[in-house]
Image 1 (cartoon, rainbow, N blue to C red):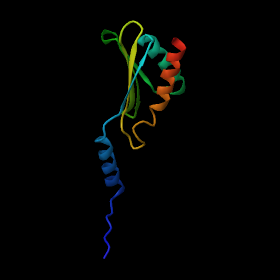
Image 2 (cartoon, rainbow, N blue to C red):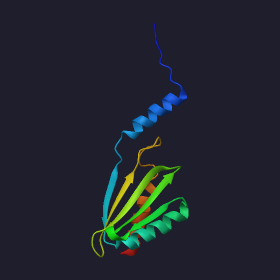
Image 3 (cartoon, rainbow, N blue to C red):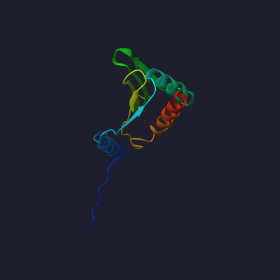
Image 4 (tube, one colour):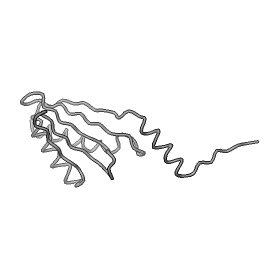
Length: 121
């Protein structure tokens, strides 16, 4: 006799989201020879032309700027620009797990940041 497990769509969604929530959010670290404020401003300006829902936050006391993508109160990704001196920036991009995968939405900002870093050298 064959038994089949039947889950309601709500139970399936809850199970799927619970599994995603337990995955660690990957972090991409890169260093650029560009001032963090200039790199963050260029990246935000370029990225926000494509996506008007991006958020920008500057924490000058910590030499940090943050660009983030949030959809319906759910964080999708965050790019931190951390000043490591006058002309050195460490960028940390963290893509949070979603049902679409952890890095689907973070790829365009990575390309934008690299493009801005190249243009600012």
